[in-house]
Amino acid sequence: MFNNSSKILFITIMIIGTLITVTSNSWLGAWMGLEINLLSFIPLLSDNNNLMSTEASLKYFLTQALASTVLLFSSILLMLKNNLNNEINESFTSMIIMSALLLKSGAAPFHFWFPNMMEGLTWMNALMLMTWQKIAPLMLITYLNIKYLLLISVILSVIIGAIGGLNQTSLRKLMAFSSINHLGWMLSSLMISESVWFIYFFFYSFLSFVLTFMFNIFKLFHLNQLFSWFVNSKILKFTLFMNFLSLGGLPPFLGFLPKWLVIQQLTLCNQYFLLLMMMMSTLITLFFYLRICYSAFMMNYFENNWIMKMNMISSNTNMYLIMTFFSIFGLFMISLFYFMF
Figure (cartoon, helix red, strand yellow):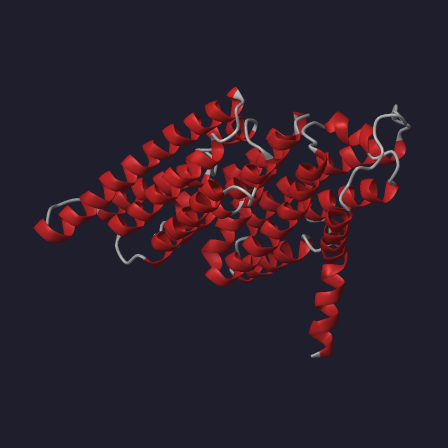
């Protein structure tokens, strides 16, 4: 990816766009940063010569342009209210801004473009969409104080993320619905504090990176590839599914730590109903991850021994295994450091 100078340019501009949004002190500046971010992300999407990626970039452009238009419109309304003392209901305009930002980040009930679009992307683009592209809209959501709309979005996101992933055989759609579910958790952590959100986002990004790194090396896109692929190396197969469980948030792994923090903070805020919904939905996501893992570990899948010798670059393997080690034993290590110091 980084051997292409134009890609480096677009990635840099994309990062700058996000930073402009995060550091701006007006809605207009934030909108401008989001536009720069969007216009530099689209060439990264439509780079490949297949039709799916072109279609995905077009879908992305249309949804983001719609959200940007709504955002610009509502920020102008806010400016009118401040300058002309117009009788414009401020909570109404804030609600419009909030819905535009939820559409930008792909949270339910504005999630419809997200799984379809993920289907047309390469793994690295999908990773950027699931992690980096979420930063700017989520930071902007922290400036708005509309609890009830955020609550509705959190509950819908966790439920849709859980139920949508049940039927999927495509790994990219599976990761997309998983991302929607995690987005629900992130939005609920935004209701508590930005620091909890940052911790959650960091761990989620790390775990997503480990999985997509692996999928990208082996060019895995569907579940049946997972089952019949790692013939020569059972360790790789085992670690891959451990990472799946870690992303789902199964307790001994690292993915449980951010969820644990959010659960603790929500109980301190007496948000028991919200917590119940979120935990039930996470159990559903864990169910389909476990179902995949059981199928892969227990059943004697038809494995072609002639499919491939492991043509992996050893440095990539080592990097993946080191990250997997942190993903599996991270919670133990953090607990250990916590009790030592």
